[in-house]
Image (cartoon, rainbow, N blue to C red; front, side, top):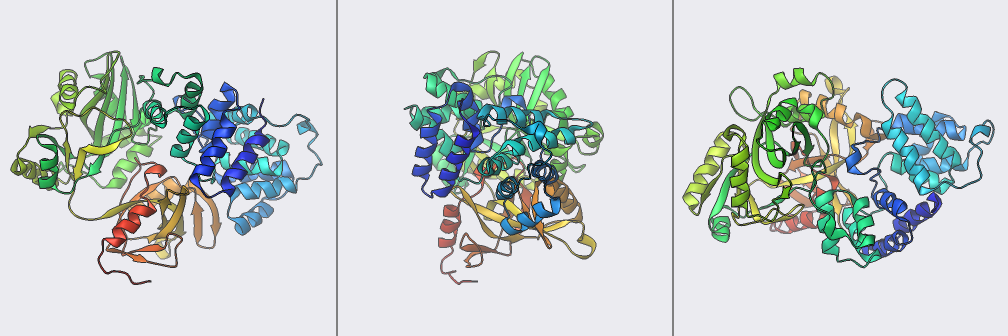
Length: 556
């Protein structure tokens, strides 16, 4: 049985090297020596994923729970914990310092001689995540307290980071996939395909060892990575590239993947989070689909009385709603637009051409919940549909290759999105600042970061405060409340978990930010609650956009 200390030592080594190939080699060497149960857990641990997605669990550990558990375990005050936090800015290092200064008095109940194992840490974290209802906070604190009481300083550092699902070692999905391929001598494309079909890195790792990756396929109740669209260069050039194209509106809404198993329906967001309970009217619509089993791809849109899409915060309200859901559904009804079919009555449809998938979809779904689609090679017809979409308040067009298969997790030229020319970036939110005056109770501005793919680290690129109404600020403050890791004066550090789509006038060179760039006049377009951190725009894209700005090379 592998000790958790060996895992913590791996993380320390990985965090200490900068090259992605060296990180992958270290992870691969570690994974191949684990048994199947340890392999399934550790593969997720490395990228901060604690549980198999099929368990539909979230840790639910905020800063107050984490720091209280540290204080109890180590016999120090929460004030001391907060001092360490202000000096380091890292909850993991705070845990390490707390454990190192642990007082032995009064912990006889926690005395043990065996080291913590990977499995034991996982079981304790499972208990934390499953705690609910009255007394759940105390249950969470006690289980974390136990782990910290048994940990070495190094183990404490990574237990804390696991608890908040923020490992900070510079290894994401791609790195773990490549490490699994190297550890078990598998083709990286096979590993990637298996992960896109299952969204379960532990399951993929175990099957890679066994040589059974090809056995993994689409399964009802287990969401798969969604097929993505690439930005097209314009209607004319995109139509010439595709030839006859399936033309659809690009709706101003939120992507959903719907799994129907007879009358049981589960709905997953673009980030593959289970949002079923928040969307009761979409569940009822899906129950009316004429199939025993189906996996459907589509978009939900919040519409106003004028039949135009509502602002982003209205969708945000619906997807995040936990209480009085039916009341909110009446106030902000959602409309469903299905545009693809992934699985039908025991058979995957991934490899069928789009035209056949659409034909099957039309056979099982009412026209009222189908996205309109026109197949044409006419540029004029595409431009006409484009204007109609914009006139109705939507984003533009999606042009699709009618002969293309459905490729999970892939962004390619088979789907091209056409939007009005206004450059935007999808950036991670890593910090915020409290407002002033009447906005003093809101987080009023947000610190943004792009992704350095070479190191898998987030690099700051500036702040955004424009484009936010009081209503939006209230919603966002509520959203970020549980993501606050520390506060210093008016500023807070946030656990990276949310993506903002941000428009700007130009990108400028800047020595003030770690990315080396800054955005001039940034404005929030919307919260990309449907996007994961791995989909944040890269430093490479920022640099490319900057280079395309012809002569705007001044430092600020």
